[in-house]
Length: 91
Image 1: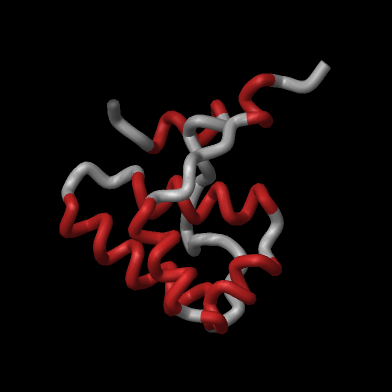
Image 2: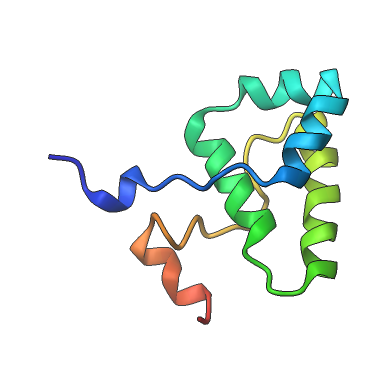
């Protein structure tokens, strides 16, 4: 039986869906990522509380994925999926 924490998936935010739909190059790179990598990016861009920070993360996601990066840099992982990453995030 799989650990429930490994089954966690974030929903695609509308803002990311709109950007992917408007950029064939980004959409192709995104499609090449694993489900887990896409989930890490979504968590990384939606976890900040301030909209300004979320917007910055969304912009960087675009740049990094287009540059071929497969995961967010310096990211301990999705705290919703990895218990060991939870210590880095305050509720």
